[in-house]
Image (cartoon, rainbow, N blue to C red; front, side, top):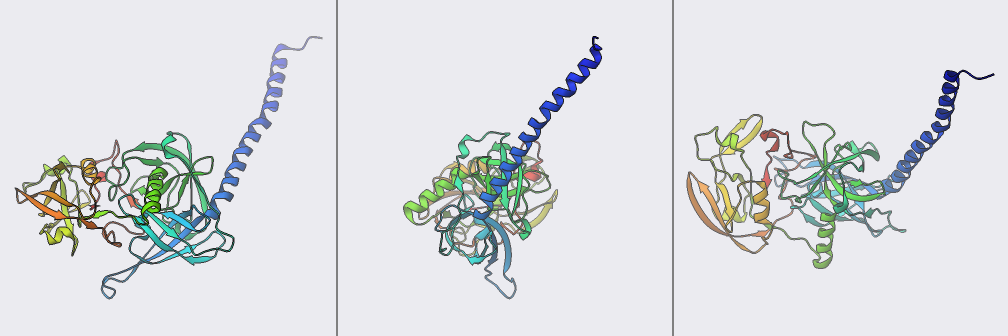
Length: 384
């Protein structure tokens, strides 16, 4: 007797579904197993940092604390992390994955790239390590993992994708020209930890989240850290030039709001005591105001150029300071009360701790310009 065609078709479909289901489950299981193995490999090489920062005025300004992460790249105990996590630290307490606590030594710090190199005390059998990948080969859409200890609640793994690769305009200091954007959740305690690809290789150093946004985090490309490591290995130190100023770049919309002389350039809101800029007579502003929730200090000098190179926005500013070195004399063009002036200033090496407390805190939040963000979200304090 011939079977009904509809019944035969239905039975065939059910059999096909039954045959294909285990394959889907197995693929899902393999992905889970891979993530478990990656965590088991990465977590022991990740460290949690508890930092106590120095204070120049302990009575009126008590010492502050911060948290972050790092990752071990050599069995001898070499650790990479963010400069802003450990700059100005008097004590860097390290919690290892096994629960042991040790104290790290700060070997080198590159505030311009936001990278620091630490050293752990010797361990009897050495430390577990992670491998460094190649951030030049990254593509938007590939998987990204973040390992750290957010809020000190234990070592965790979060996952996402690489959602963007672009310029680092507007981040504190002059960060690399290429920054990694990821959807992997980042919280306090993750800053300085590893951003890892699906092979378990570190492709970036987790550095910040975008304030007011969700599922947008940033990491410094690991190739930038490799360059810093190579310089430290060759010279035994990391030196960066220091002028001693800090400020923000106004957008055209803000310049149009005021009748006082404003121009495209770095509005100098702070001049550090004892800095080359202070000794040369550079003036910071005194008029404090807030424009659309962004604080400003106006009335000071505006930096227009360095050695003839314009500094009218973060991009040109980064290009102007890139070739500069400590000990070099630079020609500084400023706008003061509507008049152009030129000063000749000798740069010095940036002292440790100079990034605190104005530009960093234990909260790893920054604003990063990107398409679709308002000008006020793109405005950040930049020190040099």
